[in-house]
Amino acid sequence: MRVACLRAATRTAVRALTLCSAIEGGTEMRTSGRFAYGLRVRGLDDVEELMPADPDGTEPELEIRQAGDGPPPTTVPLNQRYGARLLADGRRHLAMDRDRGTATFHGPPLSRDLLAHPYLAPAAVAFNRWAGRETFHAGAFVRDGRAWAVLGPRTAGKSSLLAALAARGVPVVADDVVVVDGADVFAGPRCIDLREPVPGVGLDTRPARERTRTRVPLPPIADRTPLGGWYFLRWGDELSVPAVTAAELLGRLAAWRSCPELPSAPATLLALAALPAWDLTRPRDWAALDRTCALLGVARAERGPA
Image 1 (tube, rainbow, N blue to C red):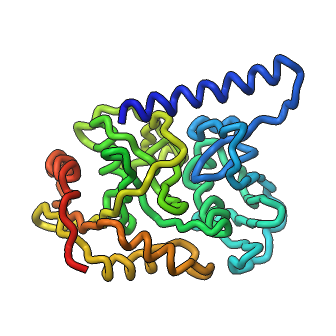
Image 2: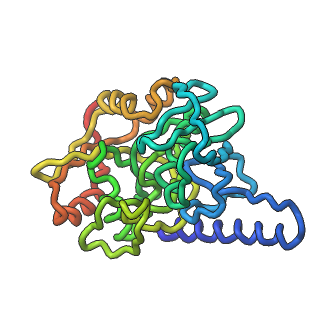
Image 3: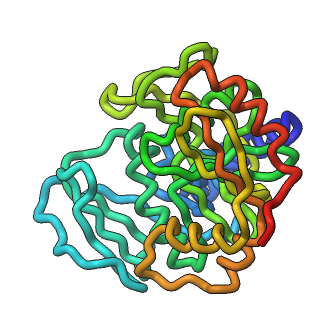
């Protein structure tokens, strides 16, 4: 895992040097953009939570724009080409145009930390679904060279668990959105946002999102990591990790996927449901974090009957 992080950091440095050389040589001044969720993101070059994009990469492009306080766009349900809606904050609208490759925020200006997370996520979800990829409201961490997705409703403790894993040297792929392309998961912004600090977790933090969250910076990581399987988080009295059958997993993934109004390939969902999955139940107690993390290190050998 340390080797993967070192390689990712080296690649990031090489990309930055390539950009500097181009500027010094008087060549094309347009940067290669930033990378997140399997997309080349333009318009956010000064957002430090996003890794530099590979100049030679072929990922889909997304340009982020801000339109200020002018008239908001008319609401249009997401379709195969376009979508516009009021965001959850109730103050801003987001218009996404597949043909133009743009996502435009209408309303009060967004700071860099807000653009990194959570506002990039809804645009990234739509553009990835348009690209034929599956997306889930989930996080993911790396173990044994594979990405393990962590799913659960809000307040299920996804981010706090990922922060605890990060404190133990476990690479975190993404905090809020898991984008799956074939058998791979793409890296998200390099941060975890916590509603409250996790006791006993010695990580650097800073306030973010208008001081409503504590942000944990993450190191660079490989752009993509093979998907290993799924964990569904639950609260309960005892720590347990029973396996989920393939039939049950298929139904869950179909329900958990983002933008269900857009079609999904049945073969893709069947392939994802063939991976191992578990229900991770643990007490709502910070003292259980050590045992939970230890259990995650071994809960991979068994698979329930189909």
